[in-house]
Length: 219
Image 1 (tube, rainbow, N blue to C red):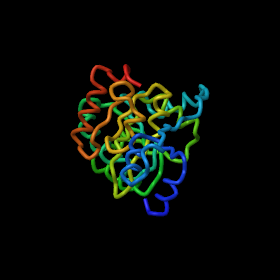
Image 2: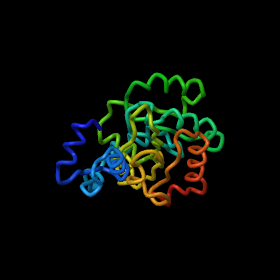
Image 3: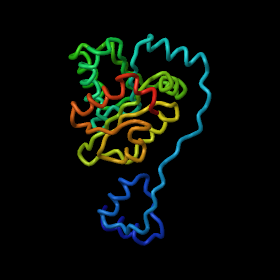
């Protein structure tokens, strides 16, 4: 925070933070701890998804399983790269595994090239510019939301509302350990946190969730 912003924050009665992580970040920058209140973001109430859209989602996924999904911008911090790399080994255990990436961004071509390099074309779907209802249908039809975010340059996950959206459909999540994900994911209840920089950490976490259908008990 620059001095001007810090001065403004310390001259208001209340500062609202979206997670414990951002609260601690503000404190470390000099904001008075007594003024900070944490209010986690909420989401819109669930709306019923039409049977036709649910059928379209199921048809797209072609009865494959287990089903991973990420809804986010395709950028370094969201860490799609490590997820795709994990699939290389996971497909040996789960030959019908499918990973759906919904979003667009500067990493799109790099990720598509990685998929080709690892021969995962039949296991990864890239979708963008789809309707909100179809996105929700794909969430509903998936088994696990995965977004093990990392710190990239100065960018970090402040909270992660998409984890809450996944949970609203009863789906567990895997998030990173560096930002505010600990507020959005209840460890061992609605998912797990892992070090997204460590491919083995992500892979082991995925195994833990899929072994013995453990994901069905989470979310």
